[in-house]
Amino acid sequence: MLRLGVNIDHVATIRNARGGDHPDPLRAAHAAAAAGADGITAHLREDRRHITDRDIDRLMAEIDLPLNLEMAATEEMLAIALGHRPHAACIVPEKREERTTEGGLDAVGQFDTLAPFVARLGDAGIRVSLFIEPSEPQVEAALRLGAPVVEFHTGRYAQAEGEERAVELKRLSDAAALAAKNGIEPHAGHGLTFDNVAPVAAILQLAELNIGHFLVGEAIFTGFEASVGRMRALMDAAR
Ligand code: PXP
Image (cartoon, rainbow, N blue to C red):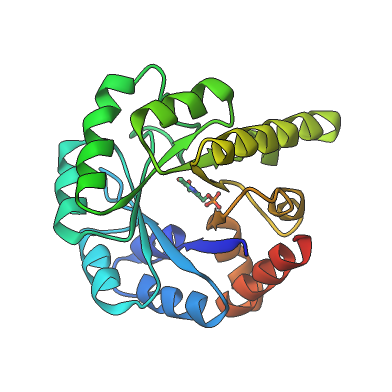
C-alpha cells in the first residue's frame, strides 16, 4: 500500500497570517487521520514562518499517526529532533529567502556535512530520509550515507508539461527502482495535486507520498477531510 503523509505546514501559514490559534494544525492532523492519512508531516523552518516549536510539542503529544519532521541540517534542528524523537526526520535544504523548498538536497556535494546528521538521527532510532532530486548520483550518495529512506522532489515533474512531463516521470521511476534495488525506501513529494498524482502513485516502488499545499488549498472549497479523502482515493486507484 502507498502511504499518504499529509503536510500541515500551510494550515499554520494561514493561522500565522493573523496570529492566534485558528486554524489549528493539530485539528488538521486529526482530520487528516480521520480521512485516511498514514502520517503527518511538518517542516519546522529556521524562521518559524509556519510550524512553530509549540506545534511540534503538541503534535508529538497528541497525534496517533507517525510524525515526519522536515528539518534543515543544522545543530538547532538536530537538537530539537533528538529531544522529540519523531518517527521520521526528512532532511531538506533550506534557504531563508525561498518561498518553499525549491529543489532537492545535494547529497553528493554536501556528503561530509550530511554524514553526522544521518548518523546521529539514525542512532537515536529516528528513520532518516533525504529529500533529493530523482537522479542516480543522488541515490548513490544517499546509499553511501546510510540513509534508510529517500524522498524524491517531484517539483520538476509537477511543473513540466507534455513530453517533458514523461521525461520527468521516467526520472522518478528509474530513481525509485534504483533506490529500492539497493534497499532504500523511496518516497516522493512536492507540488502533487489531484490532477498529477496518479502517474506518480502508480510507481510501485514508492512507499509514501507527502502532500501539503494543494490539500490545504482545496480544503477551502471542500473541507480538509474531503480534500485528504479524495487524494487517498486517487492514490489507491492508481495502484
Ligand atoms: N516533501 C517535502 C520534503 C517538502 O519539503 C514538502 C513541502 O515543501 C512536501 C513534501 C510537500 O509539498 P507540497 O506542499 O507542494 O505538497
